[in-house]
Image (cartoon, rainbow, N blue to C red; front, side):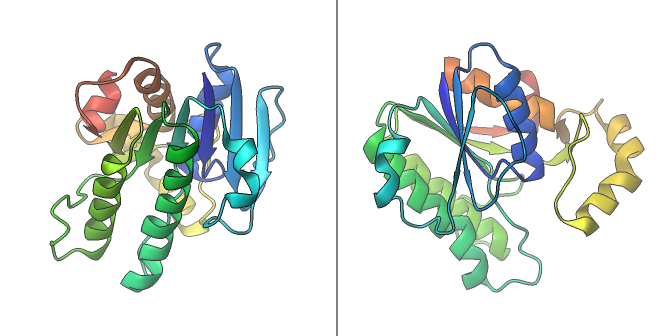
Length: 218
């Protein structure tokens, strides 16, 4: 498989990139983002772009891929709905629409979150915007699209969050997260998310929306 990853410098994206580079079935990985991953691997190419809303100038570089793992995202804390929507909906859809036109046989997997509001009318701002994004992605003409809704995620293999306060929380709670792994409904790991994405892209899955328990069972 040939895979595009958005957000490979984030905590989830780091884990997904790691599993893609380790998997023998993955032939090529293209990382797209505003900053470099710092990784060096024969499979990996990086496309650094300041503008994540327009791909018209790089269309030839985006052709021929089998799957896209979209791991780019931000917290809604301190943001207005307009600010949060610009990253969560606008940037996601700009990439997805470009890829759907260039690679109609592609599988698109989007990392969203537990509690996402598919009705788009709930009181929680981030959940509404995530739900709107999910629904829009599912309407695009991909071969298949899947929404990954993990709850808590334990970072493994030295993976860290770029946000210092988030990393501080993970450092303190890591023993608790390890203990919680016995409850697959509520927690997964960066490793399991990456492996599940690869397997779902390769084989498909009966459900279009996967919660933590589904991710852990793939």
